[in-house]
Length: 95
Image 1 (cartoon, one colour):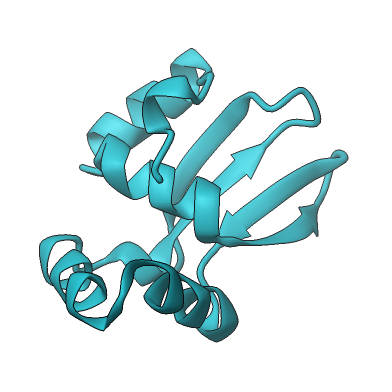
Image 2 (image 1 turned 90 degrees about the vertical axis):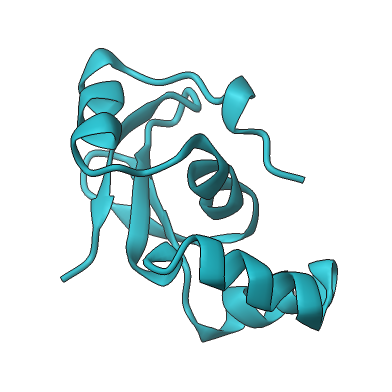
């Protein structure tokens, strides 16, 4: 499921992750199940939209899905910016 430990991160992304209290588990979920869209600089922005959340719910089951949202309440607001090489450039919360 979540491959956060396998994500290669820049020093900036590690600092932002720590500063914004985003767990590796949450990063892994966004990386694995988040919807991808183009971002400036030939990068990819991954975050949850309704379709991606529904896919996560179908994959893990309704009960576990509810538990995940309870444990990571801001999961739906997290985003990642990923370089073409697969390196996580930064992470944060949508406003």
